[in-house]
Length: 376
Image 1 (cartoon, one colour):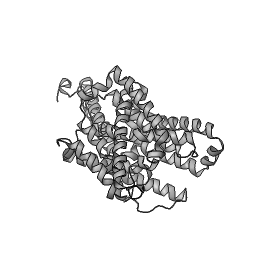
Image 2 (cartoon, helix red, strand yellow; image 1 turned 120 degrees about the horizontal axis):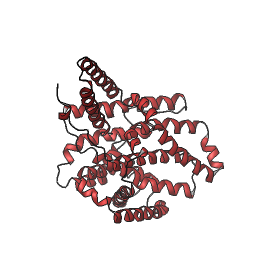
Image 3 (cartoon, helix red, strand yellow; image 1 turned 60 degrees about the vertical axis):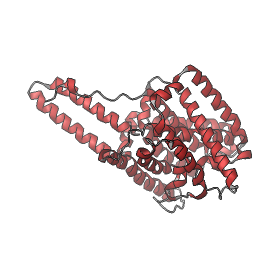
Image 4 (cartoon, helix red, strand yellow; image 1 turned 90 degrees about the horizontal axis):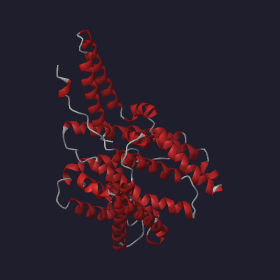
């Protein structure tokens, strides 16, 4: 039996990124909930401000946390069980919910990701591209060119338009290093980050004069947006710049310390995949009609409710149970490994060596948990 002192120490999660992940997925819930509100100057302004940077920030963080991905059997299996399986399960589940509960008509199931499911499709392809772009010299410039040109042709199949359009933010995350990101942890960066976010908030006031909200989704071809190619190239380039500055600004103001909010960062995929059922239920229940009659109150209630929903779904006792549907293979593997560990402990109890074995098992399980959650 190996000595407990020889067991590898568990990988330490950076609270900065768990805080960022949880904040970003909460903003996803807020943004989707705001679609229930009526269109007015305030609501549309806040919506455009949020979508100008929070999805780019999410993609940037995803890229940074994907840097270790490689074309190995272990990593490919992790990609399958952690991305492909949830996509298939929740694309079907949410589609059936929208069809049989909401009476909606959907087509091209699985081929054209519906509503939030596009991110899993994108994550699958981005991860596969990681070994290509991470070592590539000038890879970020290549990604920018791909993003700008993709608007000419890329379509809805597996949301390829978004995959290619947002690619620069993912590659930027791949190219980032702890040393470079350390610059964002400094006090001057925090002040600059706050100023940049305020500037984007002001700039969002004129979104409809130089673009339109649809541009912020990176999903439509330039032809659908009815602009010339030269104007489209310039608009996409400006959006990439704003998204980049917004992503950096957000990371600069995110708290570095750990706490209860930080621990919720391990369950962002649970929040992402389950919140849509609640938002759609409110839509079917007629919430938009009530919101239209109470514009100010509905904005406050909707925003606070969205934040509360995100926190509830990331509450560990609930999230652990919901995770059985999100990652059924991973949950099964964890149960098997835990059962094997308990068997080992039971065997060693009779030999009087239980304390040493328990210490080794706990350390090993911590490593496994860290490895699994760091991929989310």
